[in-house]
Amino acid sequence: MRVYNFAAGPAVLPEEVLRKAQEEMLDYKGTGMSVMEMSHRSKTYEAIIGEAENLLREVMGIPANFKVLFLQGGASLQFAMVPMNLMVKNKKADYVNTGAWAKKAISEAKKFGAVKVVASSEDKNFTYIPELNSSEFSNDADYLHITTNNTIFGTRYTKFPDTGKVPLVADMSSNILSEKIDVLKFGLIYAGAQKNLGPAGVTLVIIRDDLVGLAPESIPTMLNYKIHADEKSLYNTPPCYGIYIIGLVLTWIKKMGGIATIEKNNNEKANILYDYLDSSAMFKCPVVKKDRSLMNIVFVAPTVELNEKFAKESDKAGLLQLKGHRSVGGMRASVYNAMPIEGVKKLVEFMKNFEKTNG
Image (cartoon, rainbow, N blue to C red):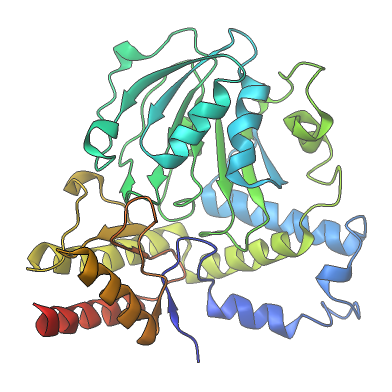
């Protein structure tokens, strides 16, 4: 029996995708072998990775002057790869601090140059997205970095800063493909796959052509974007099966009606849960309304004991992984693209009953 998996990542995948992968597990399109067994240098696999890139370009509207890279190491490696490749001209960059992952990105960047934190929401425990004042931006920064959605604290950007000639770099790990964005606003986008894209093990990088090849010769080969761009993500053995699953997920998104339909569904799911939270006498969402995430909805009960009881009882009810991140406590419902609306409705029904019996 399938459960409703509210984990922040690795996260729920579309059932249709899993069934297709199951169907092709032993024999991919008559090859007599699994994609997991296939040479990444074979024509068959080159077609698989090529189709995944083409689908992503179509679904996201990625212009021709951007490279699409399928890498490894997660967003955590990108915290270092971004400054190693881009913080090279003036050796300085601007960052916005909106939570744990932004702080880690800042910490890594400081190893490679001067970092200016142009805005932060740490003063109120990251419960909002700070207003960005362009007068605070450094005109000579090599880039400005933001984290578009914050899994732990349940916030997201609803508008992106205009950085002029300074490239805007974004960690979109937890909300990529969840809503329509204009790729042209960015110089580089990166995302771990394990939220909306596919299984853990693949990292997506979308990088504008003029930002490829800036890295000094001293940079390790595997950490140079140009190497991966020149070799079409096949410099070394890529995470072959994960990229294949990404292709299936993108096919599913296209079949659903593309990003427009996905965004509509995500708004509906989030509104169902937020509307209940705003009317509840027991549960509260600490996030400023205008900055609430569509993907990671955080909430708390009045006491630690009630939070713990809720997490245990919801698990038994087949509503899994609702316990909040260990650094903040409470609860968190991650309602990524593949979470069906029925799952959110079941959660709200469970919360109402819990409130009645424990209020």
